[in-house]
Structure formats: C-alpha cells, structure tokens
Amino acid sequence: MNREQKLVRYLILFTALLSSAVLMGMSYNYWSIVDYFALPSADTDMLLVPDAASLFIFLFMKIADQIKFIVTDSLIFIGGYDLHLTFRYIVITVLVVAIVKYFYVPGVFELVSIFVCVLALIVSQTIASDVSKKKVDEAFIAYQSQKKLEFDYKKLLADRNFGKLDDALMKVETAFENGLLTVEEYGSHFEKFSRTTGDDLAILNEWVEGSKVPEIALLARASTFYYLGGEVRGTAFANKTSEEQFAGLRKYYDMAVVDINDSMKINEDILQAYVVLVNITGTSGSDSEAEDVFKKGRGKFPESYYLAYFYVDKLQPKWGGSLRHMRRAAKSYEASYKYNPLLVALKGLELVAMADSQYVDKNYHTAITLYNRALLYGLRRTVLDSVYYAYKEIQDYEAAVEIMTLCLDNFKSDANCFYKRAMAYAMVSDGDKAKLDIAKAVEIGLDYSWKYQNVGWMYETIKAYDQAVKYYMLASDMDNKNIYSLERLYVLSYYKYVALEQVLPYMKRWTEINPDEPDPWLKYADTLGDINPEESIPLYEKYLSLVDHSDKNNEVAIEKVLKLIAELSDKKI
Picture 1: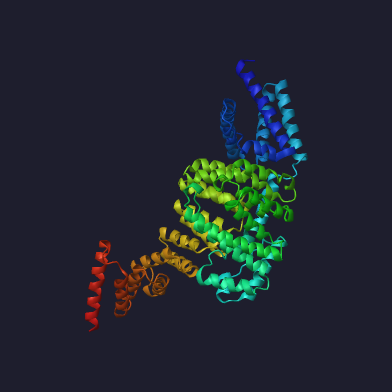
Picture 2: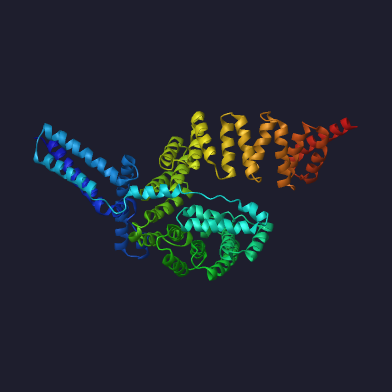
C-alpha cells in the first residue's frame, strides 16, 4: 500500500471519528455544541487585565475563533441552520465513502470507520436532545402563526370611544394570557399608541382618567411616553447622542415610570408593565435597577420569552452593557428550554448585537455571517429580515430571494415574506414572479402604508403604471402623511399615466397636510389648471404667498407662475 492510500485511510477514519463524536454528543447536549460552534471564545474582558499572559491567551483564542467560524460557516452552507442534520449528512457521506473503499481495498481502518458511523447514526436516531433545533423552529413557526386581533385604536381614540378602547385592550390581555397572541403581537397593540401626540395625547389623558380598567390604560400611556422618549433620543450610540436628547429621553421615561407604578398598584400581574420598565431601566437606569425589575417580573412570568428577550437585548454594548452580560443572562434560562423552546433564541441575541454593529458600520458580509450563526438558535423572523436587508445592501438580490424563500417555506402565510421576495424579484427584473408574490402579500394584507408605497414603486419600475397608481393611492389612503406616494401620483399624472381627475383629491389632501409648504399648492394648482384653469388662480396665488422669493432656486418657478396667472386672468376677462 502506497503512502497516498494510507493517508486516505487515516483521513477517512479521522473524519468518521470526529463527525460521529460530534453527532453523538449532539444527541445528549445539542445546544452546548451549537454554543461552541456559534459563539466566540475570545472574551474582550481579558484585555481589562494589563498583563502579557492575558493578551497572549486572548490573541490565541481570537485566532482559534477565526478558524472555528470558517468551519461553522461551511457547515451552515452545507446543511443549513440545523447542525444535527448537517453532521448526519457528513456521517452518511463518510459511511458511503468507507463502504466503497472497503469493497475495493478491505481493511481494518474501513471497518472501524463503518462501525463508528453506523453507531453514531443509530445513537442520533434513538437518543434525542430534550429540545431539538426542529422543536425550536416549530415553536417560532407556531408562534408567528397565532391569531391576530385588529382594532383601530386611532379612530376609537379620536371618537373618544373609551368604553371600546377598554374592551379592546382587555381582549388583547386575555388572549395573550391564554397563549393566543405572540409577544410581538401583544406588544404591538400598546405600540399603536406610540405616535400619540398633541390633541390625541390630551384625549389619551381623558381616557386614562375615566377608564374602567385604568391599569391597562395607564400602560398604554406609559408605552406612549416610552416610545416618545426613544424618538427624542434616536438610535445612535451613546457617544453620538447629545445631552439635550438624553434630557428629552429622561423626561418621557420619568412620566412612563409614574404611569407604570400607578398601574402596578392596581394589578401587578400585567406583563407589559415589566417589559416597559425593563426597557426603561435597561436604557437609562442603573444595572442593578434593571436587574431588580427583571427578577421581579421573572418571578411572576418565569418562562416568558417576551420579558426575557427585552432584558437580554437591553444588555447589549450599545446600551452600556456587554456581550458577556448578554450571554450570562441568556444562559440562566437553559433549564427552561423544555418549557418554552423560544428561550433558546436568547443566546443568539449576542450574535445579533454583533451583526447589527457590523451592519451599521457597513460591513455587510460580516453581518450576514453573524446573522446566519444567530439563526442556528432558531428561525426568528426578524433575523431572517436582517439577512435579507444585508443582501440587498450588497445587491445580491438572488440571495435575498433565497432567504425570503426560506422564510416562506416555514412561515407560509406571512405577507411580509411575500412582499420582501417580490421586491427582490423586481430588482432582478423578474416581473412575473414579483407580481405573483405581491398579489399574495396584498391578499393576506400588509401592515404599513410604506409597504403599499413600495408595491407602487415596484409596479412603476416594471412600467405597470395602472397598478402603480392603485397602490400609491392605497398607501396615501392608509396614511395621509405618506408624501412620497403623493409625489409619485403627481409625476404619473404629469406624464398622463393616470387621469388628472383621479389625482386631484390627493393633491388637495397634500395641501391640507402641509398647508404652510409652497410645493403642494403649486402641484395642486398645476393639476387643477389642466381641468379648470380659472379655479387654479387662487392656488397659484397661495403658492406665491408662501414661496421664498429671495431664493434664486425658486426664480424660474415664480416667473412661470406669474406668467400663468397673467394669462389665465386675461382669459377670464
């Protein structure tokens, strides 16, 4: 036997032993092995100790991590996001190679390889981890497909229909307690009050004062203050946020805390109270405050993924925490995996935080690999979306299609997956497939005006102008502050792709939304001018009263309008 043949035998045996050992280990403790492959071993806290030994160990582990992650990314490429299945494929492949080799050149090495592979496959079939990757994925799929409740809170608030507001949120609370709503869906009902400002905020105060379930009304208002605080602060890292922004954040957060405390005096068993409080203390309070609130909430809701998610998420570095704290908090839930498989995903939040940081820095390829490792801990919809957006940033639209196809393979009736895949199809000029996906997305129902706006944009790019007009109008009807859709309607009417009479009400709406802006009045006047020229004169005059005459960029438009008014006035005479 020559040297090359011996080397092949050793290689087959080594691969059989290693892959079989990993496969059997996964049968006993799957998630520990996933942790090894997915999570970094090098801890930056080692650098806090200024000695040569710590630095050497850190650098060594950093290099080891790089090698390990190349292997991990290759495993994901081979078999997807379930490493148990991936190693089964590897062991089966080695088994086939060993059997073929044995038929040609029988030997002890081949027999041992065959025996080890068969043993590993038997063990992996008969002994299963308490919580498999499949169970976690099924939990997320079932979780996303739970029943949704729809209430028009904005209209109920505007109509001062406080009784129905009380009833609506009581139904939400009851449905959530009975496991009929996902935590995102549950939280979204409170988030719908987040844009409440001005007169609506005064009405919200009226509701709180007269509510028959004040503990829930108070939480709705607390959620409003929480989101207003976040809006003032922005999403930048702390070192890029001004003191004025922090002051605005604290003002709203203090108001939210007062409402939460008042709510908890009435009823301490409403999960939303702990979630908002954890978010607030995690962002603006001390670590000990956040931990105390979390422990109290965890005592009442020990297996709540919702509460755990927000607590671990607020421990990420950009909020003043660290990856080590995130990992420690996530690890504390290991004993609860069998009660709520969703909790497995908490370990992936560390990777998501790292990926988000890379995404912000425009290191999109690195972000994609980190998001992919996070998906080893469960097919979370938001992570699939993040991978999709990263692929779009690097203009790899075929990969974006693939990730949304994976989304639809699992979340079969998710309108947003159809919508995102349609957008990717549009970018690769596959208009027919884009239309099919859009039709399915619209049939199921999209949740935001800007998505219908993007559907309009997609149809416009493939020159299906009648459909583009339809969806721009739908986007504007859904949210009358959707200015982009109004702008596109004006452009399409200018090029005669839509009747002016159809667009005219939308141009009028634009002036009602921005009465002090000159541009809407000009577009309204132009549109009306082609239908009823004489009636457009007051609109042109309104434009002239608002436009900045000292700005040289407006000179051509002003001159044109003055000329039009003169011509129309002469005809009128």
